[in-house]
Amino acid sequence: MARRIVVHPLLLAAWPVLFLFAQNVGETATAEVLPPLVIVLGGTALLLAVLTLVLRDARRAGFAVSTLAVSALAYGHVRNVVGGGGWLPVVWLALTAVLLWLSVRARRAVPEMTAILNGVAAILVVLSLVTITTGKAEAAHVNGGAGAGATPDGGPLVWQGEGPPRDIYYIVLDRYGSEAGLAEGVGVDNSAFMDALADRGFTVLPDSHANHLKTAESLASTFNLRFLLDLEERYGPDTDNLGPVYELLDDHRAGRLLKSAGYTFVQIGSWWDPTASSSLADLDLGYGSRSDFESTLLETSLLSALPEDAPVRAPGLRQLHREAAVEQFSNLRRVAGMPRPTFTFAHILLPHEPYVFTADGGPVSGQQELDRTRFENFSQQLEYTNTQLEELLDTLLAGPEERDPVIILQADEGPHPVRYERTQDAFDWTEATDAELREKFSILNAWYLPGVDDPAMDDAMTSVNTFPTLFNTYFGTDIPLLEDRSYVFRDAGRVYDFTEITDRLSIP
Image (cartoon, rainbow, N blue to C red; front, side, top):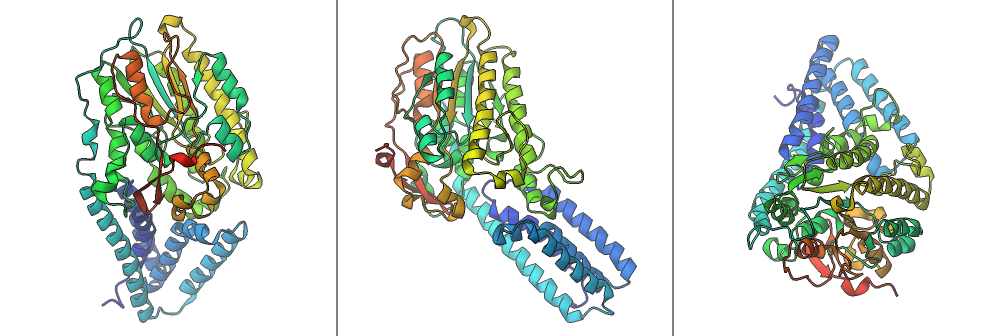
C-alpha cells in the first residue's frame, strides 16, 4: 500500500512550516501557523492533481511536486546552515531543475522510491509534531499562574502630581545602549543626542543597566516591578519556554495600576509578536501587517533569494522592519491628540537590526548591509533613530508647559556583542567577557519629568525601578526600590538558569 499511495508531497510541503513552528513553539500561537499551513497544503494538493493528469502517473507527479515543495520552502533553512552568497540560488535552482527533469523524463517511477519518500517525509513531520506537542504541553504547565504577580495591590493609583493627570509615554528603543556602552562596544559617539535630550529638559541616567538578559525577560521584569528569579524555582533552569515571560508582558502590573488611575492604555507594538499587542491595552496601534511567524516563513522560502525590490516578492522582514518603525513614530504623534490621560507604551525595534535605514531615512538593501561594516550599519540607523526621536519629542512638548507629558526613553538591552552573533542561541552568557556584558546590559535611560524640580534618581538606576520611581514621583506611592542587580541566563535552551553579573558591569 505504501508503494502506491503518494503522500510525501503533502508531508514534505507541511514539514518546513511545522519545523519552523517547532523551533519557535514557545512564542508562536497555533492560530498563527494554521493559515500558512492550509495555504501550503492546498497549493501542493492542487499542483499534485494537475501534474498527475498531465503526466498520467501519480508517482512521477509526486516526485516533481516534492522537489518543488522542498525547493520552495526549505531554501532558507539550507542557506542558514551553509551560508552562501550569490552562488547558492544558482546551485539550488540548477539542482531543482535536474530533479524535475528526471521526474518528468522517467518512463516510470520506482514504487520502492515512493515508499521511501513517504517514510522519510512521515518521520520528519512526526519529529516536528513531537517537538510541538511536548513544547505546548510544557507551556501549559509552565504558564499556569505566570501572571499572578500582575494584579495591583493596595488599591488604585491616585494622581498626586501638579495639575491634572499628565499623559505618560514609555518608549522602549530596542538594543539602544548607553552613551558609554555604545562607545565601548560599537565605537559610536552618541554624545550629540545626549546633549539634545539635556537641552530639552531630560534627565539622562548615564550608568543605567537592564536587569535581565534580552527583550522578553528585561521588559517583563520592568513592567511587573520585580526580578524574575522565581521562574527558575517554579519551572526549573533547563527549559527554553518563555511562555510565562510572555504572559507577564501581555498582562502586567504597571499597566493594571495605571488603568486603575483612570489612564487609557495605548500599546504601539511592532512586528515582534510578544509586544505587537496586549490584551490589557485599551487601544492597540501596532503594526499589524503580518505575524512574526509568517514573516519568518517567507524569509526561509525561495522568495528570499529574489531581489528585495522584485515585484513578485512578498514583503520580507526588512520591509516590515522599515514600515513598522515609520508607522510607530507616526502613531506616537497621533496619541498626543487623544483625550487625556493616556499611558502609551511603544516598543520600537530601532536601532535593532536588520539595518534598513540610512542616516537620512533612505532604504538599505540586504546586500548593502552585508557590504558595510558593523559601525557603518549601526551608526547610520542610530542617527536616523535619533532624528526621529528629536522630531517626536518636539511634537510632544509643543503645547503649554502645564500639559507637558511624562516621557521615559529607555532601552530593553544593548546591542549584541560580535561573538554572540556567530553562535547566537548556543552562546553561553556565563562565559561572556566583562566587555561583552557591559555592551549588552548598558542601556539608554532618559526621563522628562514635568513639574519635578529635582528628580531624585541614581545615575545607575536599573530598569526594574522604572515604574516604582514613576509612581512614587507622581502618584504619592511609597514603593520600595529594588537593589540594582543584573542577571544573565545561560543560553537559549536554559532561559531560567540565572547567574548574577552585577559586579562585572562597572567600566574599569
